[in-house]
Length: 346
Image 1 (cartoon, rainbow, N blue to C red):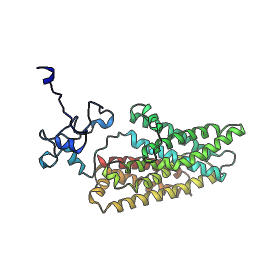
Image 2: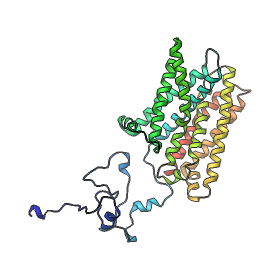
Image 3: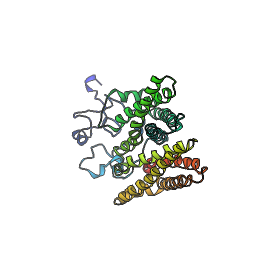
Image 4: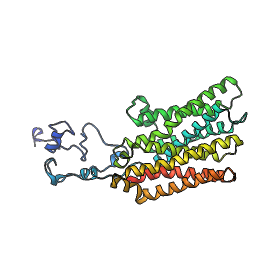
C-alpha cells in the first residue's frame, strides 16, 4: 500500500465537539468528543464513563444511537468522583473558619483579660484546621502544584478559584495571628491582632464557599439545593467551630460567649436543614436523594447529633461536664453533614 493510500483512523472534517462533528460521526476519543491528537484525558475526571455509541454513525436524529452519557444526564443524581478527603476538607476548613470568626469577635469584645484563651485557642484551631485541610485538599488534587496553579488567575465567576484565594489568605492570616499574637514585642503582637481580625473576616467565606462550589457543579442534586447548601455549611461550620472551643477550659465570660454562639449556630443548623428539605420537596426525585439511602441515613444521624449538641450546650449552664460532650457531638454532626451531602450522588 502506498503512502497516499494510507488513511488516518479518524478523519476530522469538522471542529471536534461541534454538532456537525457529532452528526457526521466524527468521534476522536471515548465519546466526550476530545480530539486526542491535540490533548489527552487525565486526572480524576478521566475515569468518568461518557458512554459508548451504538453503531458507526452519529446519534443525532436517531433514537437508537442514544449514548449512555445521555441516559445518565437524565438522572437527578450522578456519582461523584471525589473521595473522602473532599468532605473531610469541607468540614475541617469550615470549622477553622468559624473558630477564627469567633476568636476575632472575642478579640474585639476584649474577652478573657490577659490570658485571652478564647482568642488564642480560636487562632490555633484556625491554623491547625487550615493545615489539616490543606493536606486533605492536596491529597485529593494529587499534586501540590495544582493548587498553586489555581492562584495564577483571579476569576470571581469561579467558586473554586475564589475559594482557593480565600483559603490562601485565610491560612496566611491564621498563621501570622497564631504565631505573632503571642509575641512579647508590642509591634509584632499588633501585627498578629490585625491578622487575627483578617482571619475572622475571611472565616465566613471559608466556611461557606464549599457550599457555593457544590451548587455550581453539574450534579443535579446539588444544583437544586444551591440556595441552601452555603447556608447549611456556614451554620454547620459555626456549630463545629464552637464545638472545638467547647473542648477547651476558659473563663466564665468566655465560656458564656461560646455557649451563646453554639446555641445560635446549632439552632440555625437545624432550621436551615429543615427549610432546605422542605424547599426540595417540590421535586420528588431530588428530595428522595437527600432522604433515602446512605445520604438519608447520614442526614438523620447528623440531625440527631446536632440536636444532642444543642441540648448539651443548654445543659452546660448548670452542668459544666456537658460542655465537652456537646462539643464532640457538634464536631461529629458537622462532619457527617458534609458526608451526607456528598453521598447524595452515590
